[in-house]
Length: 632
Image (cartoon, rainbow, N blue to C red; front, side, top):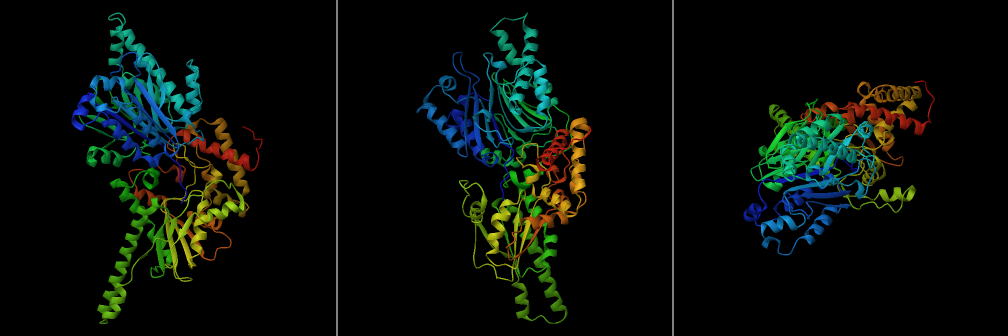
């Protein structure tokens, strides 16, 4: 119901043959550019605040630019960028000889990268939009960089860069990574320079450096200092290209290679669709590994960092990635099916007086899984009832017909009708507007008798649920409303690329605090603050534990859910309301390959996440209760 902003999307294309090959085979020099557009559009769900495109030309002559970049802001950024690129292409591009097309035409080159951005830091504007550039007159020292990442130890990276004598222009993880990788690239240039300086002279010396650069060394120098979730995509001006994934596999990356092209993107079905290839030819980039394409076009997978514990992000499977992936589709259906036993218990196994629907559209696949499981149960119950009649010799055709007519009632109950505008910022007027964001289908519900069940993929803040969904469903006069979340309670912020709110904005956290207050256990809140503060100030990140778990420890999941329900149910609602969540065990059963669950469990995959959640509680406490002077 509430859109989570989340990790960005990346796309990389490296042509492995001369440009004239693609003109001859596919009819246009824009073969790669066209596919970059498709890769980005089909990942538009991953970033609607900004977008950027970059290209590196391998054969530009001196005096002509060899790196081009376009960036734009807003949900229409992709279209804006490609319209501008198209306007710069000559009207008879495909009639040009290959040398002229390759050298003189902007955005016709051999290396392309695209980026779709969602801000996870609150920073916005072109200044923070990827790709980032490090320009240099020596192509082997120039670099273009973009990524899907969030680093949890930016301060440590900053201090390391400053200690090396550099002066970063900005304090942000993208800039710092570019500076750090740039420094490592400079050192690699020096290494090759020292090898050849007494053997050859420029310009052949520069060509020798370009040929022998080791991107594996560059990444190996920089990456061990990173803590976070990331897929970093880069290209050196002389042609070396890479994509590196974090050692826990937190952020996703998939690639496809043949003798013509090497492609990488954040989602597998995107590559499958754009290049029309079977699933087994699109491979996952393993955690800690890099896809590296040399200047000469050799494609290799190299291990840069030791593979750590598998913490692939489960929210990718629940919500973010496109459901057209065959595995994700199956997993989302399983998430919906897993909630059915709890749901049937709440319904008293009464399907006759229940109606099932979903909100929003991203929950549709989980809804299908839920309904299929309900239909399986309904079929089993009908079969048992008919068998009982037959065994008792009472197989009356009319009775059997009535049994067979029992169905799982599925309706499109709620429809998103308008997008709430923000010209009214707060207060009663805004709340009244929010109640009309969704519309309902009248005539489906039998007033005072039916239970309406709606499934969502996540309930994070609960604002839309309280201000709009429950109120609009109550207009149908159901006896009861049950809201089902196909994911567990979101209890902790994410620090690896998903833009989750501050602790006090998470409805599960607020519900736990409410219970502590109601039960007179405020001392636990104060004690948790003391533990978090001491940890942040005195304990190395690698040794810290997540003390925020103490806030939830006294309560069962059901108690937290009941408190959430009480907080989100408007006082004037007529229908009874229940809210139920997926269990963490149910999540792992449905999504076994992606066990990363720190936003649900609090078990962060790296030390940086644990440090940040302790700091988040300190910040929450001091905003709410004021700072306390504690011994350290």
